Image (cartoon, rainbow, N blue to C red; front, side, top):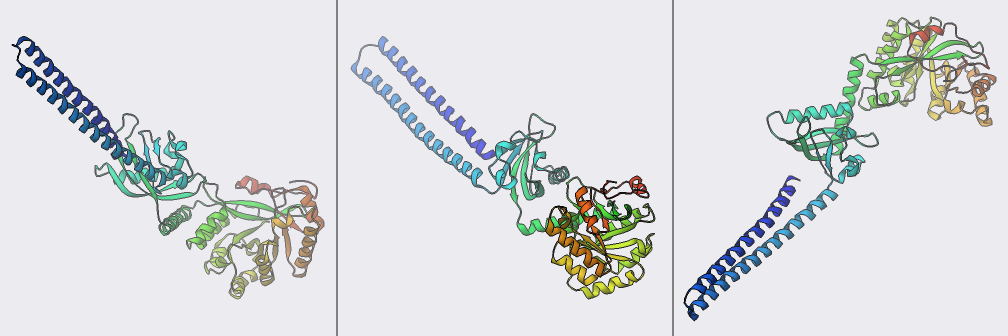
Length: 461
């Protein structure tokens, strides 16, 4: 962009300089012709002298005309060349997969090429005059500033190969490699910058993304930043709270669900570490719960196979008969024999097993058949609208009978209306949880109130 600007400036100066030279040359010729005519008027008449003066004046005019024609041709060639360069630059800016940008000392965009629409979802006109924070998360912007400052620390005015993570308009991260240079400005607390950003190869992005996930998971685990919310589980026949489900909560502003955290941790081989950290946090907080409540702890089958689990549960303050291991479907169970062997000693000590999301698919029912759990938690997809859907009611009734046959307890998950509560109670489901009965809460004062909280079939808690 700087070379293009310089070319246009030189072209402007060149055209005006040529005009000045031609003007001086014509003026000089006219002065000489005027002087010769004045001299000839005062000199004795002579045909030879008159002819000589005419020849000199004509020669000067021819030289001026030749110079002018040559200058005009040169100027035309220069103009054509500049137009070609300008067209080429426009083509580059419109078609390049690299994003060209510039910003002022206030970190507001002053230029953006068309690639911003493809790479970040913003048309150039939407960026001009807007702050660069529009395309950065706060933490990523701070990291980008630091990386550029480090690259410029040796008193250079340019840098290359700095990797930064932009934010796409849809919120997705976009990793790019940035090169650029600083340029003085009259406004703003810092110099302006201009440069290019190009997408990194897919394999590089994948590596950087995994590294970022590991750093975030490690920081969360090591910093003890996992919170625990408990959601009450009601005994529907008595209206009392008999248990709670422990739900991990993470200190994040990005709106990502706990499942997203666990899925990302699993993708980089840290799923077990994150589950154990969440489990430890839940066990510590469970000490503040009323002593008559059992605690359902969400674990994947792989974590249940980890030899650290029995030791961790034994060190906790919870009696074994207050612990329910709620198996999630984050990982498929390929082999049930080792899982059953791992769970059996704990079950003999009084610990119970629950299968989560039963009825949502074949995998959950396979868990039920193979594990013979103490508690079957029916998925929200089966409970939602069960008061008006005859097919769901029939399936719910069948699950109640199945649970009775294998001596298991049914928990209806996701009860959100009075009609759903009434329906599941009429079908013989003995336990339930959901927003209608009680939302998850992080506050010990709410947990203490569960000592005496009670519902009926027609009342909310």
